[in-house]
Length: 498
Image 1 (cartoon, rainbow, N blue to C red):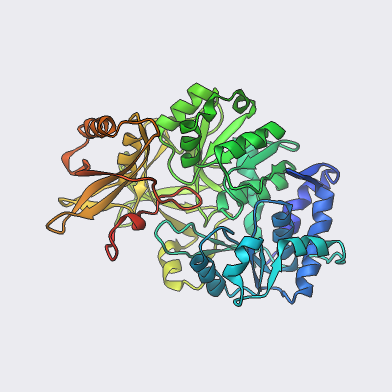
Image 2 (image 1 turned 60 degrees about the vertical axis):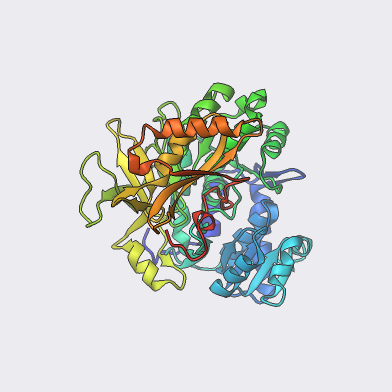
């Protein structure tokens, strides 16, 4: 679709299901509330009116610090309908991060959970979620703004694994391809139910559950509780969805807590993983205990949609899969030339849902977005079976004795060690100031430290000498973002760069 074509994202998300006669079917299911497509359409029109009454105008940013609930959907779609830019962020984030986002996007209004209010107080007008819901019925529905496909529609902040937050600018037209992966790869359709343990402020869940599922005429199953294995069981016992979207660290934790022994997990048709590479040991253990594959895939905040995906019945082991529907991908070496077959290369992507750049970051935009292509920062290698395998992140890699070390490669190998609940590899300076691999490790509850240490050292013997961890540091937990990515900068000494 041309960038100047009339299009409002809120209508593009709900329109297909409504046109197919789904007004009375459930669009959202929450613990104490079910909302039909028709009610969601009317509610979002009332939300647009309410936001306009708060002084929000087309192009203004509205910060949403909300749990996964119908209120989130109403506020998000209402802002899109008005032509304002919703900016969803973690309501449980530390105050400094929320303050940064408020200043960076210059939010004209914040709709918040009560616990997030102190972080916003004095920085922007506030509308608490209870007040927002209470006032909706009194607001007159507002027609959708006559926005354009290429017009800025919403911002998505990256997960901050490097400690630096930045917002990808997405267009109204970005929502149009979000149902293709669900329909063409996963085989989902109208009436199916989907749930994400990943929160809606994360692009992965936002694109699959709020955008893609609703465009498909499927039902989004929401849970306001912070995700945990026990909370996932509670969701499944209220009625197992057809698909669950989660991240590798959640699947690993669920297995460690014995969740895989519960038979109700087998009632879910599809389990999907993204956010970071899925360790083969986790995928194998899940298949053995649950009787279902985890379908690994890869997408970014800048693309919303999956770039790589495994399909049911043809999942490739230890792989992000093959190019997803609508994704053009290429691997380039450091000089910008195509990578040699079988060699790792930098992943560049082109897709209709691609962001236009970063908010207030012209230099970073110029580095990452070129001629319609986006440099993801991920390194991939294509195997003989056609599977794309994640080698690491270019910003995580470090040199030892002049040779590159990719932490993700070593972490995946170590993940199979019995007694190891989690791990992260970081390059830290030795006594001479030269970087060496150091493995931070978390033990399972019943593990013996010396046994695990011996297992890790034994596994490391299969690696070239420069890749072997020089030291193992046992810690209580690995610092991760809300989306499961390792925050390596928190494991490095202050002032030490990667």
